[in-house]
Image (cartoon, rainbow over all chains, first blue to last red; front, side, top):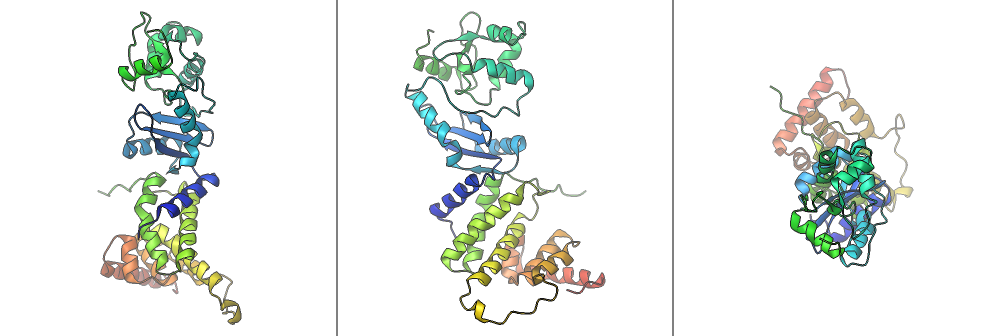
Length: 186
Length: 157
């Protein structure tokens, strides 16, 4: 017997409202393609550019606990703010983030990254210096590459010392597109 | 060599895999609205207990056991003439299914599920087979070997 959309929705909403989820997620549309967005009770914890629920749900369960459920209510606010960002109507995100699964050095780097303003770029070396490890530019690059919450934590604003785009988990085209959207000088 | 015990899947996968079976099971026992309420309650209870599971084996039997318990409780609550019927004597204050679940606790998982679903929840072997992912005949054999094992241990199911 097939569960109706309404009954399915009712259960998902009740589960989220009762606070029973380790992680709620949904796949949301965006101008750069579908994104898998996930949040815990503490805040946004993952944004994936290429949704692959089969593998990504396992990753969420391993990291945050097995009670992983698709729940639009959990990511509604993040989706709205992302929409506004892609429309050019939002320059900063007002979202809590959950970085508990991130190692202390990476968390520190991501904290500095969050302060890089809209429409501006910085370099791996500068970011390294800001966390008191001026020679750790390469390690900062690795942290950017593994950024669990791209776009919201703006690793697209970090470029090489010579101004080259260097790399991006979502592809260099996307990095350039986000920087152009923000009106950054390239 | 022993087979690896299946890992606990993310709840989303478990829910998608079991939801149609659970709803079908409840619709056989309850009117539509009550079945839908029971469906929601079944998965909320499963979700509350989910992070305490130790492995991902027999998840269908597990969730149908929860559904069966809720169906029985709902049936009791909603039967319109229930308050006019004399109370049945309850020997030690516990419902029969709690007693059987307790007794069956030490059985191997398949036999335990078959015994509990058959004798505590009065499920037909077709339904038990669905729960265990086996044939009705295999379900019947699992229930009867479980009962034999309990008797040989001096239990009195």
